[in-house]
Length: 94
Image 1 (cartoon, rainbow, N blue to C red):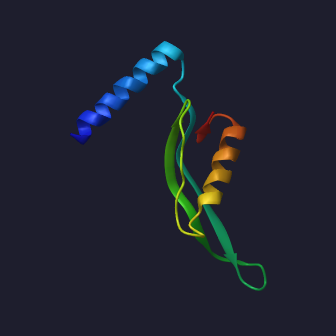
Image 2 (cartoon, rainbow, N blue to C red):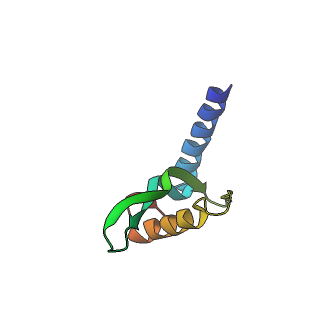
């Protein structure tokens, strides 16, 4: 049943793109951010992955909610998506 739903969504998206141009206003694929961990002398000792491999699509007139615990990377994801679409084609597209 999930495959049928996915096929229906793909068919609808294709039809919308053909009828109205691009159906998505924001597309993010595999975006990630790792913050460095440094010792007292400023040398890099590793990193903390705040966001790793996140992908999503925001359709025209759509709403996207990002939900999670405090410190899980919601704000970092929003900043990355904003920076990606400002940069132009690549990981994020607007």
